[in-house]
Amino acid sequence: MSSHTNGDYGEANQVHVRTGADYLNALNDGRRVFVNGQQVENVATHPLTRDYANTVASWYDAHHDPEYRDIMTFVDKDGVRRAKTWFLPTTREELESRRIYHDTVCRMFGRSFFGRMPDVNNAIFLTYIDDPKPWEENTVGYDAAGFADNIRSFWAKMVDEDINLAPAVIDPPVDRSRPEAEAESPNCRVVEYRDDGIVIDGVKAVATGTIFADWIMVGVFWRPGMPEDQVMYLVMPVNTKGVTLLSRECLSRPDVSEEEHPLLGQGDELDNSIVFDNVFVPRKYIFHLGNPEHAMYYPQRLFDWLHWIDLVRFGVKTELMAGLALLVGDGSGLLKIPATASRIADIIRFRETIRAFRVAAEATGFTTPGGMYKPNNIQLDFGRAFYQENSKDIINELLDLSGRSSIIQPAASDFGEFGDLLDTMLRGAWKDGKQRLKVFRVIRDMFLSDWGDRGRMFDQFNGTPLNTIRMLTMHRTEFQPNGPMTAFAREVCGIPLVEGQGTVKEQVAAYVRAQDVKTE
Image: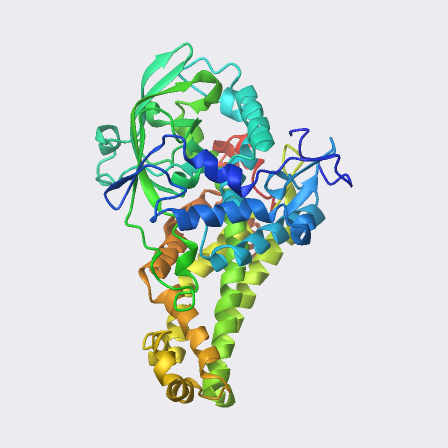
């Protein structure tokens, strides 16, 4: 692992953390961006993008706040204080320190609705730097000498420059009933191999926050029939010649007041598509090429760290949901009705179950080949699946408890003329009608706005949707008919292990299994 990031060594002799102003200035770099059909000349100042850009800038500035110094930063072995996004935990205690960092970021920025802040984006690189060799050793069709060093060099660059690296791995949809359709698609592919690099052309259909990043990590999500020329793992600056970012419709509303919409004013992460028009990628920024079998198993481990942070974020989000339910119950007197109180108890139980998965993932973690202490990826994936399966019901329960109050709300200006009447009308069991109204304004932004609905869709599909989590479960060694999960059942039934019967363990390379928790 990098010498930059191994533990906290006390007082710093220098601080190397980017400022928000530096970040905003860097966004005005000629990148080609379209939002709502408009070309955005400067992401930092355009009305559709400036709010989220300023939120990310505030994220950088928070690392300089003395109040959050011990949470947001660490001192590396060279005595340099850096953002904790670059901290590589080697023990459970160090993992907890990093988790507190992500938890704090979720609470401060986006209130758990932003899933691609820089601390999350950069976690995509932890698997790379943990074990760079497999990326080089498993490349096919191209001279891969030095690819592992490319990974190490770029990690050092990321740390030194405090880069925000956004992943882009999702290809366009194809006719899934025809495996050959993959080769016919506009998926991003290598169209020219050169000694000094490659040229790529095509599209990535879905990425998040790329418009606000410094660099893009281009990868693939394996699918049957994927040809070798579509398998690539590499990085490039967002403003690279030939790169165009096409955003979905912006869902934030910069024209509304923070009082009436307490969440929308923080901006929109802007999921986007990326068009690559014969883009040249220098050799030094290439990590892997050409091996669909490698792509099938190993790169999914890139998302393990992101998914752990997702589970942390789900813990924050479900805490907010449970807290809102209690406030709704208190403000309406519903908590005093046993039948309704039991419904709120279910929301609390949902939150505590998510927390239990997170605790289990950390408590049963393991040491990776590079020496990091990694959360148990079975527990974090099952925790994410539990959230995806049940969150819609919990959200509907919260909305049902809120009733019409979550949508029928007076404007802030109405209180000028009708303040006394509105306070009496809205008060419920509270002493102050305006305070009670604040609860329902948050619920409206979270779950009854386009902005909030986008967050719900992101939670369902980012990284790996539920069906993919199920598929990955059945790819694991221990869950095979000839694996350890059946050992006790075989003993009870008196069925012996069949020697020579193939298992995933025999099919999947050891370097892949080394990134998974051992349950045997």
